Length: 117
Image 1 (tube, rainbow, N blue to C red):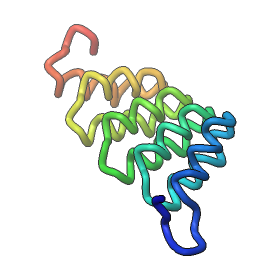
Image 2: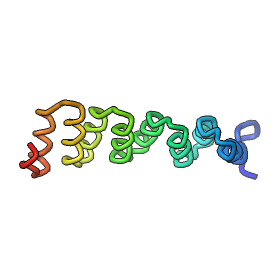
Image 3: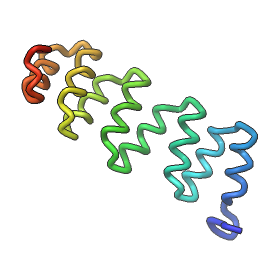
Image 4: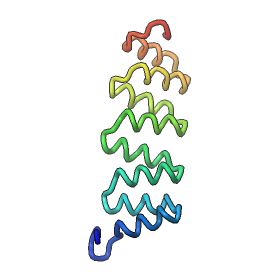
């Protein structure tokens, strides 16, 4: 049996919550026992894209975090992450979705995608 600590949550508890489709609660337990990948997946299934994006960002997974931020309508935040990951064409699209045309044009130039500027 895998325990996080003598009184802490267990893998079994988190899995039970997932099996019961209680994804938000399961995600919190996964996070407590430092199973970040499982927590991210559970937050996604719970529809908590913001929290999943925060964890992805904390883990340094900028392009994935950016995609998650974009999926919850946080296009400017997504664009900044794409830009910092040098994914300029993705950044340009996200800036356009955030109605930040000048920044989008700069990203198009950086990405050698001048026809979209």
